[in-house]
Length: 368
Figure (cartoon, rainbow, N blue to C red):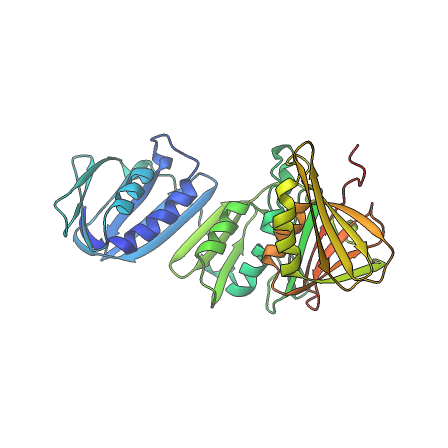
């Protein structure tokens, strides 16, 4: 195998491959990236067994062939050299990389491409299209709320379901829940699934902001295509919690406030938050929220912000990260905080957009 290519184009795709492999550092075939030069195209594949990735870039071929090479080292080499034409050749079990513009070369040991695992495939007729901007927004509004508790594996992913002419995404860790619904016409029926966050984060980071995204669902996998990228992931098995039971039918009190005011105040007040509990107090009175925190034997913080509120004096004790995370991804500048009692669910929602919201369970106001 021998070819030349643009270093920056090649490096971009190898960086994505490394994201897929990321957690694997031992030298084995699944720590390697698959390279196949054929017909003036380089096919690049990577997998961590659960996630599959494939893309293609244009190259100039002198000799066709395929091989796998340790992705971490290849990525490091490409990051260390400037942009320009890169000459790549495979001989005698080694991949040689030589920048045409530098008196330098690198040699990396390889493993036969025949040992690289087959990636799952889906018939093209089973894909359906979704506006990529809509899908990326759905991911942004939910993926941060996924549980990291591996004993509750059924909450370790984002739940996706079709209902009528809408897609719904939900994520929860048992103490908070994020929900978004988008009306998309022409959706085929498919079973509800739980998607690992890793593939969604790659889509969120790498997919363009315009155009369409193609999705297919099988019994055990989800497949996502955009541009020259083909991604697949094993689905999480198990029964996702009945999220509809968590959503309040109505809430008595509503606070209207600028998102930026809350985020800025949280940034300052969180300096003295106990890191284990992250408890932050929201003291509500007429058209005022006082945010406060206290770190034992260290100090306190307190800040007052203006809002629109006409309910009773109340103190809500909330995990500041559970407030901050949704605010960072909400588009609207003015948000609503809804509640009924300080011991029941609190909802954070946009002032006008009703397609998404975030629910969090309050903490005990008494620190004891």
